Image 1 (cartoon, rainbow, N blue to C red):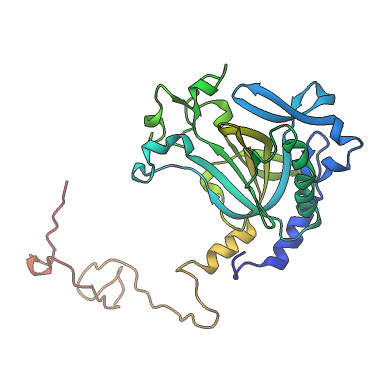
Image 2 (cartoon, helix red, strand yellow; image 1 turned 180 degrees about the vertical axis):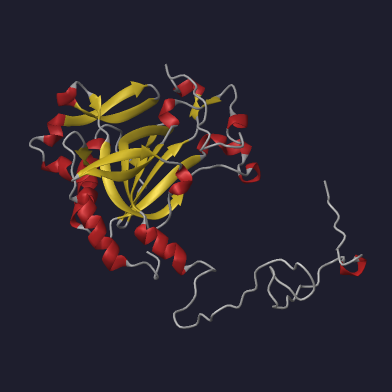
Length: 312
């Protein structure tokens, strides 16, 4: 993390956030603690879109969506505002992503251990040495989701419009063509968690531009395997949602790097004159003199009034 980041305080806050558990959710750190988890979970092939996904066999083969909390280490999130930075010939690879740091908390470390324990199970579903996973980097995890799906791999999934908060200038929409579509699988939902009452929370919709490095967030994702080329496969955590849990430490970090930040003890009181001259020497009826800065066009003053030009 950034050297200016309050790691100690953020670690305590993250640890507290991880203690809040909702029964209906699957938490990554707890999966390998489940009795006979190797037989309860497995990979299942689907053509909507073409991929292999981790499913819970005891829940009628339902896709497993995990929940994990961490601190935002890096992010590539919408909105997409500038088409000059979007290479059209690589549109199929464009994605939104977020990297989380667990700050050494036990729950996050157990989540990393769970992924390491599941990986051999994934590998045995494919020819030896043909499955790779690059989303784990030290103590960080990266979650992503592409903006587009190949029409040939979409199966029964239909095209859906981009959210306004994601593509306000239609940069991505203009890349849709006969081979690429935007589906529900490509959508990521964003939320802000707020206290409702007691220890109950509610999740309100948010825009992706809300999030900052240093924020404590919660992500929902699934583990998906895609075929990259002939007999080569990659395992990725498919990002489905991001929820802001605590913005304090992200805000503090942003202020540390803000040009508005002032070092303690260096601030000086500022002088200010407010008002409008009613006649020479007066400000708002007072006898205090006004020092009006010289502006372009002062030489064109007529009868004490300055000429102004408006450009349409």
